[in-house]
Image 1 (cartoon, rainbow, N blue to C red):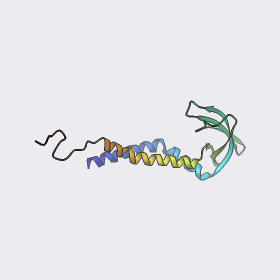
Image 2 (tube, rainbow, N blue to C red):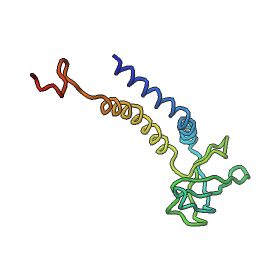
Image 3 (cartoon, rainbow, N blue to C red):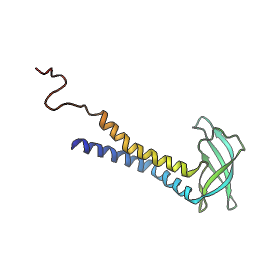
Image 4 (cartoon, rainbow, N blue to C red):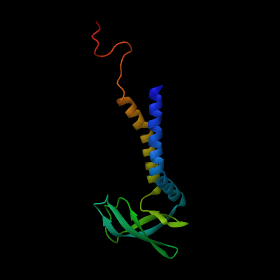
Length: 139
């Protein structure tokens, strides 16, 4: 019973960490994927040493917006790209398919919350037979 309690605590700790750190991003990705609004944007700067991020610009409703994008290693300056944004909140945008990114975020969470506590539980507990220790030669 103690082992189940520890597994449950590890699962809750990972879930709480994900809820604080990644859930807001997952919610934003979900909202972006449901808005289905896209527009053309252009690459202003690239940052290959910062995880291949970039600065892009796009226009919506007569206003111009700039945002830092992800996975921009294959883009060149001035290149036209597709921007996904929320029409009611254009400052919320992304340069990758938000539906695919949302599935990736949630999938990572499910794997983490199920696999990591189980791995710690399995690797962190020595197995012993009841009544005999592994050092007992059976005398």
